[in-house]
Image (tube, rainbow, N blue to C red):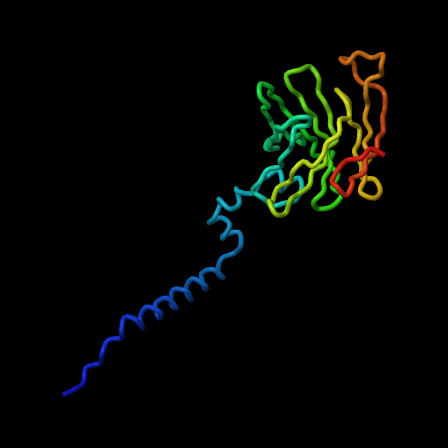
Length: 204
């Protein structure tokens, strides 16, 4: 009598099938371009914060986090208005306000240290300008305010430039003592600030 060939045991068949699947998947993966792979996973692309990527070149899902000066409130810079103007809204108890930052007036002292001008408007008539230091926390993947210094009310910022040894120079117009606040400021002021080792803005 002829001997029957025994079927392959199931326990041996499973790893063979898995190897075939892995081989096919590998061939399929290397046949796709990076663009095609990203197109299949749009959620991974959209999870990156657009402002952080376009302004600082930082890929992170977390928005720029700004501490409101003289307050315990925070806001996210999550909107773009009028081209280069970045915006965030906040609430501090009964007070509501808006902060704006000109993305063209940001000085990056290094890849993690950035200085900008923050304009704050609340329910009052003034618009207060602050020089703001933000540092990127690589552990939390978030850009956060470290310090801010009041520059004035309803000033006109002319320039913000990098100085020497971790410093910046800001030039702006402020109101003369004889001027009404509703008038256009005319007195030119230049101030220099250095970033200390403790992450503070110190006037020079």
